[in-house]
Amino acid sequence: MMDKLLDIAGVGGTVVLVILLALSVISIGIIIERLVYFRRRRVDAVKLAKELAATLDDHEAARALLAKSPSIEAQVIAEAMPWYEAGPEPFDEIVKKGLAERRKDVESGLVFLGTLGNNAPFVGLFGTVLGIIVAFRELSSAAANVASGSGNMNNVMAGIAEALVSTAVGILVAVPAVIFFNIFQKKTVVIEDNIGALTNAITAHMKRDRDAKPHAKGSAPVARQSYPAITIEHPVEA
Image (cartoon, rainbow, N blue to C red; front, side):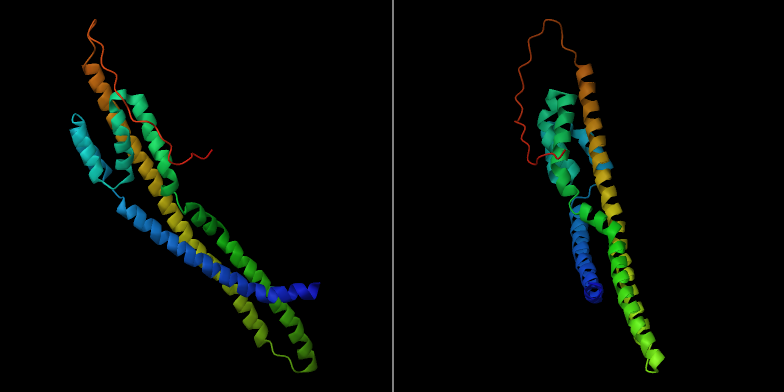
């Protein structure tokens, strides 16, 4: 049994390196895809908020402004604009719905990057342990050969050096994954904050209009506004 395990350890280090390299390629692909995704949807939230505030009295102009922006913030707010007349609470609920539907796309790949960043060094360490086991096996053989006058320790030292490469590769794979995981995680938080700020600005405008135009006693009832049906595009995970 021990001999079989040692034979497995002899090829295990190479397998670990191949796995790490494959994970590195996947990680780089996700990083590039996320960079392109966020770059295409970037927005100056402060400028958008000012322009939107100036057009809220004209809903068609506000929707046209939002339609010109490819940002996630603009998409979520534009989806909620038909609910403007319903008041702050329904409007806020539609905004939350829109954000929940897009959360899966915004956070795509982050679980993989976070998991890889946390565990790649351990995978590399596992490869190093396997390599050290093989090196000690070679050391045992070399010691026996030295006793007989024909030993060579160079193979042992080379085996130990090769084993340590796995740990180095594991760290090398983990570092960019952790860095970009934190960057993309921060971007998702910024998007949520921007949507929250835009929502607060719009609901404040609603409340101002509502307080500025109180209904006169005995006035004719206001016609009921029809609103679009609510559809859930993506199930919200618990």
